[in-house]
Length: 275
Image (cartoon, rainbow, N blue to C red):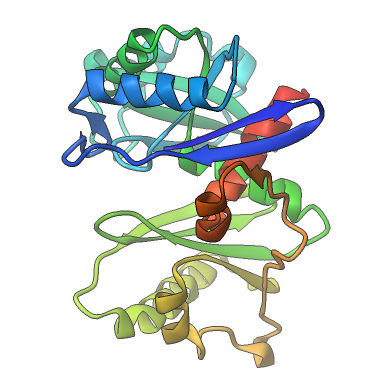
């Protein structure tokens, strides 16, 4: 668990370790223990009067870009789920919750099972904390990535991982146009799979713009991707040297650091506070 807050103009962060077997597919299984950890971590950090802005884990939540759907006309997300039959996601309208947000000139729909959302609401309530807003790790990190790359006019191939697979999200003009899961038995095949899927998307889109790779992966995996970026095609990598970074409260957290995906998600949430 990562907690991040502002104190007298300075952003700080601190981490805590979940109890074993705390989750299944992003769903909290030990709500009492998770609530205790959240409350104790904030109390130990002298954070008083916090209003929680929760970022849901990667698992269990889905998103879709809706072409031609104006967000101001989509008032009731339940009605939207009921009438939209071609989303190709494993969510049932009656048992799901969705939010609608603008995404450049398109509309982004983010949804999750009601049971998952309610479980996380229960955790925050059991910690005796007010819940101000809920977002999702991927959509928040995508906003953070777009904020960091406002000067880049080409496409972005964004790669990250969860517990069971790699994810490739291809972004064009700020819109996530491709999102696919890649499950491998051997990480050495990752370069081939990434290149194959990016090439297929470029063929389908009918154009090939300059491509920047954003690799939110462990150092161990990055060593297997040395041949991924092709400079002869004008490809490059997303620079992270100047990426916003809050200050760690403890020495252990300073040594551990934050993963790039976590930093992007926190950046996306932080910017929303000022809008």
